[in-house]
Length: 394
Image 1: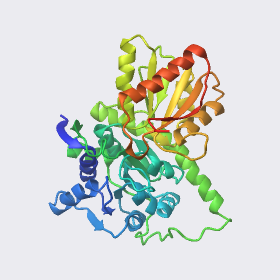
Image 2: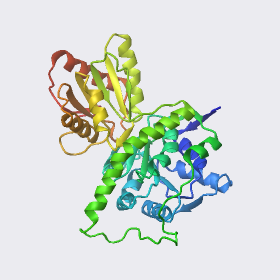
Image 3: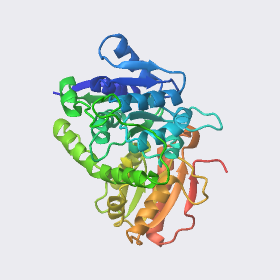
Image 4: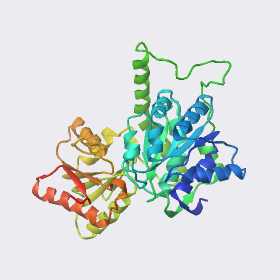
């Protein structure tokens, strides 16, 4: 029987970490992720886990400690947000190229400047090409479930890459929801032990981690890293299928909502997908055919599957809670349109909305604006503006 509980998104992530009981957690506090290591440190103090908790002096040191612990043969986890993730930047690349499956709870917050503690996706989107698997979570339940699956995904021998589990700062991280927890013994059996083939403390097989890698080998190592990311998609589906058998909660690469018969679709990540689903239900009751597609896996990007799913729509609005400053669209928009082009899907008309920067509220009225525009495009076949802002004072 599942354990029914009321938890915030941060506490849900911390509880997942407690059940996993990693060897090392190194962390430095930064809003709004502070509660994750704070809750976890309580579990350590109470003897509920035997994890080595390392309170460091910066996020750079937190990731450095995780890299050392994972390279030594341990299972390491951490949490951060915004400028904390930015301070880890060089270490993110070192973790991924060293093939160390560290798990990081990323509580999304806008990246300074200007200084702002509220939610958008500029932090994790800035790290999207650092070689980390990225999984996004709409609500507290998904944040908890994704954390339970992250180690299994990253530690798979065909992958061996670090994993970033993302949720929206304050919107879900500090919101209390009802959710179902998996029993401790079942989590332990599902996640399993971390038994790397190669690690620094194995005196029978000495290795080097992070040595100088000249042009004679660097390209080949990057190619191996890229192949691991390609392999990750299949592993995500396999682990998710096993998790569904355990819990009854099914996860794919993305979720389609109200897709049957729909002619227009909104593509959106994380908590705003819940608002979009609410509006989609209202429109469906009015006889308007609109759908929502919520990506779960952003890195690796499921090009084939996304393109196939979106091919049936006449108009698509892609919503980005981050600005690429490329004058051509946000990161989700450019990835989706690239996927459509690469797979020769030229039917749908596609537009982009940048929204919610710095934590600007996104209300049902705003989502209605997006749906109405897509329905207008369906009716007219015309796009007057591809690159748009939603809810900003011009």
